[in-house]
Image (cartoon, rainbow, N blue to C red; front, top):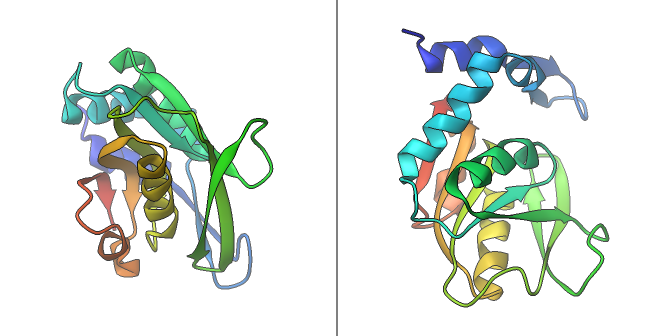
Length: 175
């Protein structure tokens, strides 16, 4: 039996001073290259939320896309991308938020959801919580109901859970 938490931690590489000095970037590409680890992450997210209870999966650019797409497939749900400003072709809603190392604006298509769609947000890392909160706010603005946030890795020392309010947060690994 594989200890998924341990395997995830072994497959995440720290890259110092990226994308700027003082930041330790969590590189998930070794995890994605390992079929057992990648499949375990997707299966654990799906199993945590229960099949048939989700209408749409939101993936946050860019690494969130990689995790969210197979989760959507397993749920039989649609996939909705949340992208950086200017990357989506139709009418959008936007939200600006603070990062560890600056500010960012993300967008979602205004027509991404039917009223009342049950939506799971999936991303790779929960750090300060700014991205997750902005994504949840965008989903709600578009008529979706956020049922939870699943992340591969939570950096608890940055207190991101505090910023997302009462959102149900599911982390596979917390450091």
